[in-house]
Length: 312
Image 1 (spheres, one colour):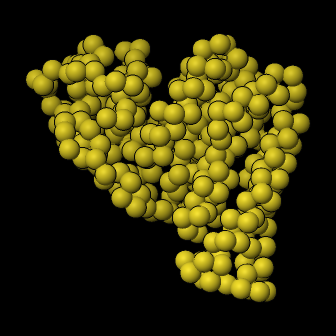
Image 2: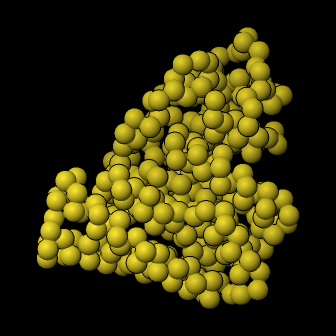
């Protein structure tokens, strides 16, 4: 997405008093990266690029030069720039932002995510149902081709059978990844294990991931909550995300764009964005969520969502 040219003269929103980050830490075994050779495996099965007990490891510091780019896209004046570029009433927008209007709503979204077992971002769920409540399940990391298969199945099958298909698929995929796991543990980075020690480490890891699939990818009753919705299809794609998370940014600009074109724009599915700011590592995420919702007051939520996730 090309960045729109924005006038340099903006009214600067005063800096806020940041809310203390929660001390609660949830542990997601699937988000613990064992090493370079396993990163793709872990992200595929956990789907959580950033977890509550992880650090960004420099991912968000790579590009900071320029106005409202890289880390600087959360600068004090940037929220107003995005609002101006979308032709929002700036005075109303600033009043909403300065009043931290949606902080209580964001707290409710965090609580809802924790209830569903969200432990990192992005966390993606798929389900089926027209109302505010629907049956669905966590899918972990997913590619558009796999999402297309799930949507196709949900058009003609019930959620339980589609869930069984997906968990069986994941467990079969784990078997295919076993040589990579073995390679890692046999390497110096993985401990240079051999013989029975190597076999044990590989078996333990595969068994842990299989248990994770059996316990975390279950059908549950989900709700739209205070999420923001696009589309009105019976199939539901719901994401818990964080505007400061680099993996969420990549997901939004890659998989999500294509998924919306294929499924939301065609009327097959609706997409629900839910806030899950990881404040212990992303101090700007709550304020970005609040700003996007303030833009939503003027009918431009997803346009502002795209601005916040824009890659410059």
